Length: 305
Image (cartoon, rainbow, N blue to C red; front, side, top):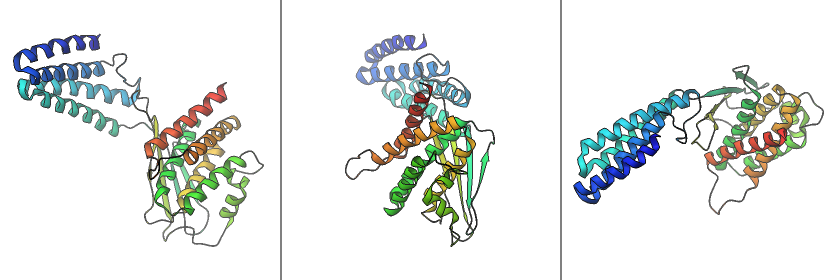
């Protein structure tokens, strides 16, 4: 309803603005009406406005809609017919920034792994919360794989190759006998059993991997990870930290959930490592996160069929 009224108001305001100040007045009328109408539609969470169905994302978007509508209309009025278009657009931008600021403050944090690799001895992992859902755990592993893939683009070629080999080996030996996933992988098992060091820089290395998910309908990436990477640190510990996280997730999943994650990981590997790129270009982090999400959804769909 608000969007329909907004279209009518835009036509009227554009015509009135043209009569008052020519083309620049028409632009001001159009910006004021569309910006205000759009902000109100988001504030009232109208169908088709792309507002999240629930949670902190929904509240942030609706708050931003209110700010955008008021600031756009006030800016257009302040600027008059000559400069109102610029002030109105600026006011709407303030609303968008307000929504992003609130959303950032209340991000939908789902799960976090803290990986500690000492100079010598076994690595340790800590998960919070302890009751994270299987879907969140699986998405965390896949999205962290994308983050590591992206981080290794600037490392010597041998390191990304090791990462790809470890991923492929995990898929190939997924169903073999063993206490955990690493125990089933010949090369990974040897790496874990290797006592010659050092395994990390002096003082050890600590990786923090946090998964965020959103139900915001107008975002392409519904899940992503934010990481804290040790600096300085051994480049080889990036793929190793991923394998440690994957192994921990593997142990927390039921057999059927493991099968779904394996399918998703295989699909992710196929796309993250196999898709050709234009010469001189590298995949963006957002594009890799999207690959993680699409691979997971593909596996979930197959599991439900």
